Length: 64
Image 1 (tube, helix red, strand yellow):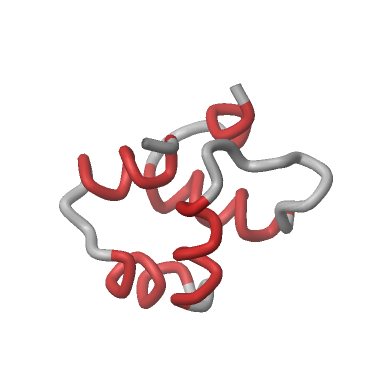
Image 2 (image 1 turned 180 degrees about the horizontal axis):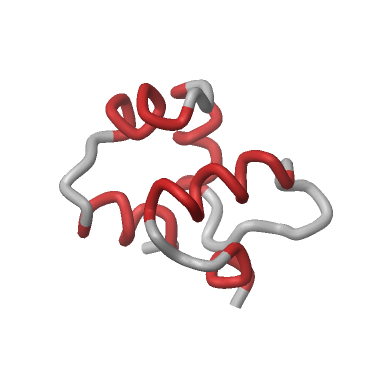
């Protein structure tokens, strides 16, 4: 399971609710969760920033 999905589940959020809270398209949330890790060269920096703030982790968490 990838880190985004783990955090989303830990925070008791559905993909749809996370999309609503962050303004990130639902399909993008699905795509980010489909990959095992986020790729620093292909993942939008603003998405990583918003997700990290919403889920209470540092941005670097997603790339370790």
